[in-house]
Each structure stands twice: as C-alpha cells, then as structure tokens.
Length: 151
Image 1 (spheres, rainbow, N blue to C red):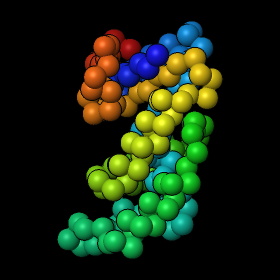
Image 2 (cartoon, rainbow, N blue to C red; image 1 turned 60 degrees about the vertical axis):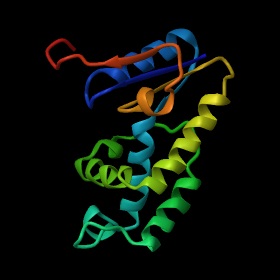
Image 3 (tube, one colour; image 1 turned 90 degrees about the vertical axis):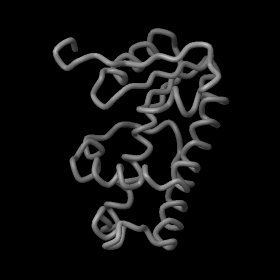
C-alpha cells in the first residue's frame, strides 16, 4: 500500500507520516529531505544559492549537470541530520526544487522507492506536493493543514 501525506511547510505532515509509518511497519520517505540533502551536498562543495544561479536568476547547464550527477547518487531512504534544517540549506533547497530536470530525477527516485519499498510492507511519503503531483490516482490522499496553535 502507498500512502501520500501532503501539506504546507510545518503543518504537521511529517509527524503524522512518521507516526503512521511506525505504527503500520511501513517505510517512510520525507520527499523534502531529498532536496535538503542535495542542497547540503552542494553547500559542502562551496556552492550557495548566490553562486548556483547567475544574476538573471538562471542556472547554467554545467550546474544542472553537476546537480544531476549528485542527485543520481543519492540513496534512499535518507536519514535526517540537523544540518538539513539550517536556513542556508532551506534557501538552497528551494532553488534546487525549482529546476525541472532535478525534480524529474528526484521524482523517479521517489517512484522507485514507492513501488519497491525496502521492507516490502508498504510506504508512506510526505511532501508539500506529493499527493497532488506524485500519487494523483491513489484512492486516498491526505493533506495536513493544522495551524501552529493546534499542533
């Protein structure tokens, strides 16, 4: 079984997804973590959002190819790391998420993980657009929209 939980940033979707995955014995993937991990990897190489794109806001083909190479080497599932939540990584991951070629590579990785989860029991994926973009034909999609006060 595949379960998609989407929602806005800091809406509680990760907490819900992790808890549900643990309860059901399913594999869990935070799709936003993929972009953050990629951002951390390139940040460690000395790249920031300011030198990844030019003054016109365009990323070069060389940088797209470099990102694609790093992306192809990501293995799933990923473990969370405190550095992934740093502000500079968040900013860089937003730049990366806007690149269609990188999104497509990451979507392929997510599809493979969802279709062949390591435990073979089932999978829960959470992300801002995972239900609407990735699992469009699923029978059940959940969207988490709690306010900060209700969490």
